[in-house]
Amino acid sequence: MKTYAALFALLLLTGCAVGPDYRRPEVATPAAFKEAGAWKPAEPQDAAPRGNWWEIYGDAELNGLVQQVEVSNQNVAAAAAQYRQALAALGASEAGYYPAVGASLAGSRGAAASTSGTPGAAAPVRNTTRLSYSASWEADVWGRIGRGVESGEAAAQAGAAELRLATLSAQATLVQTYVQLRVNDAQQRLLAQTLAAYARSLQITQNRYEAGIAGRVDVAQAETQLNSTQAQAIDLRAQRAQLEHAIAVLVGKAPADFELKPAAGLPVLPALPAALPATLLERRPDIAAAERRMAAANAQIGVAQAAFFPALTFSSSGGYQDASLAQLVALPNRFWSIGPTLALTLFDAGARSAQKESALAGYDKSVATYRQTVLAAFQEVEDNLAALRQLAEEDAVQQAAAHSAATALALTENQYRAGTVSYLNVVVAQATALAAQRSSLDVAGRRLLASSVLLKALGGDWPRQ
Image (cartoon, rainbow, N blue to C red; front, side, top):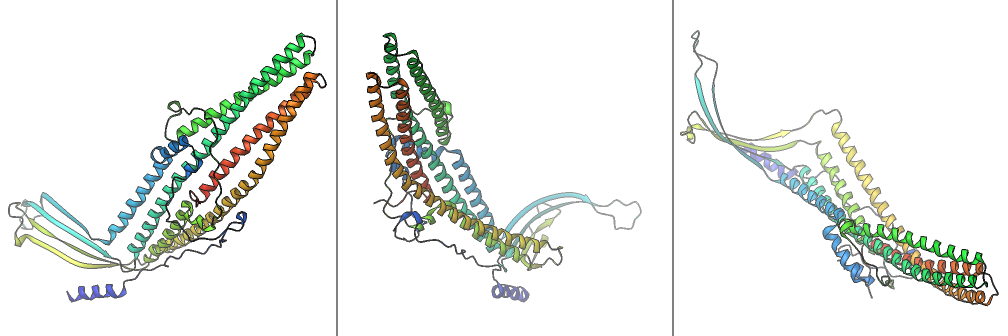
């Protein structure tokens, strides 16, 4: 027992965790965004709750669809299952802190070689019943188990972040697809109004032709304009069907079981807040997941390094063995053993060194991935801040162009009726007016899309005034 006490004391004195303790690598980050102007910095809020950020668009139907994503989207369901796997793996790692205990009950019947020395004597047949237990516990002298648990905890946290990322990505994709569908609805309404106007123009032109005022070429030009616009309307209907199918899949439904009726207008364009600190990026789940993967990889270095040191295991076994089951549990039939085992691999042809090098390389890879994720996040935010600013200017100019084109069309139609210009002038003015109006709707849709991408890039939502 003195020997065991000495080993236990040695365990307490020398217990340590090998491998480097985790420190998050530095990444050069600005206090604010280049495209933001004079914005103020803020404290990191990676644990801050995200609200229902999609409600900022003021669309009740969109709100109802997005709320279905977390429940029904299959990518989110897969990420949730992966997170549960990470939690289960963490539980398996934590079990290494505790002893493993087993028990068995066995019975056998057999004969051993005869030892009587009598030629031809049969070996006695014996029944044997054995009731036993075994227990073993590995002392975490070098921190192998602890580093494994540390890695498992970080991996589970990364899994939680990746679940949030899958949810946010699916929600943002749904918002963007919904915006495109509503822009499509607006384009179809515009084309429906335009087709009605073109049909009236064709009827007027035919009347003028029959009266001998206009030529047959004017009728052909009016028919061409009407038919080409009808083709555009058909193309828009095909695009809308695809967008509706995409929304159905995002909310976990079969396209055949889903229908989204046209709406009267576009979602509300959210106003950009006066201040957006660059530290908001720390709320992004992909950055959080990359940082936790980095911590898990760092802990794996310690696991690999601990393999170079001996493993100290305490084991015990015991039980009862007898020929008779009725007399099995009796003191004379008892057996037991207890003692430590110190095991060390002396030669493995470089396997442990290779495993350590692999762990080091894995950590370096995770660091590079983390830094690249942060840089890509800054780029994504800067891109969409610039897009929102430029698109606001473009929207004002495009609306003015659409107004001017409508005025020019009205004047040209009056001139044609007065006989001062040919119908070709009317066709050109009509095409210009329609293109300007469609471009104006396109810019409005791009502004909505840029706002949704910016919200996603900031980790979901932004500070509201």
